Length: 298
Image 1 (cartoon, rainbow, N blue to C red):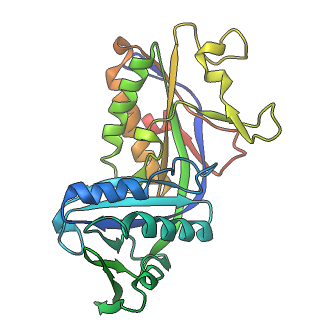
Image 2 (tube, helix red, strand yellow):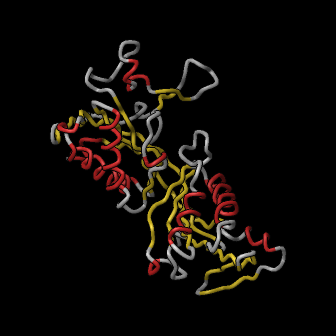
Image 3 (spheres, rainbow, N blue to C red):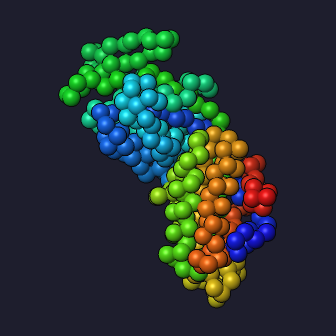
């Protein structure tokens, strides 16, 4: 398959089951809602070392938030429910409770209920007050700038992590420009996040290493500087490869994000140095969710 001169490899991305939740952060203005959201989703690129994968889903208009203020929707993914609940509570306490003018609300009504502000209320040292509105419990916690309002719980649901595709280009600037175009379009798709910095990862990995202590190491087959030293998957003209990883609430959500992202890369085309689109998989051994590139783009 070739789209605008870009070859689409006959391969698939391999993804695995995760647990996910969504939270809504509001503040006096969009600036402070975003600052709080960025803090809450920091150091959350990969479950390999961060404990969770998190990202900003989208900016919310005041008409879309529970308290009618500017807001940001964030999503957090983890390998299990216990780990997800711990990450949510820790990040909410350290990054939203502390952030000026912030409030915190559930972003998923269904699923298993997990603590959002339920335990943060104890910071109020007995001065906190509970409110029940339309069947939902909220906590009002006194803080130095006024009060912190937090919904007691949010929903935890089954999700999918690790959808991905690789952009192979003639140069580093061309690969990055293509990924930036892809991320711009992918962020318009609901229910997904791209957890790596700016949505892009340059250090794609393979399972295992020559060093026993490491469970993953550099994907040497796609490293352009190693063409003459390893079994490479790169043609001579490819000098840069970047990857976009996607987590979503369903396989269909990731399908949509991959489709618009790959299309954005292909729109730049061979004229802008884009040679191929590929994907990372582990022979079907890592996870049950397979995203076949040519089927997605058919």
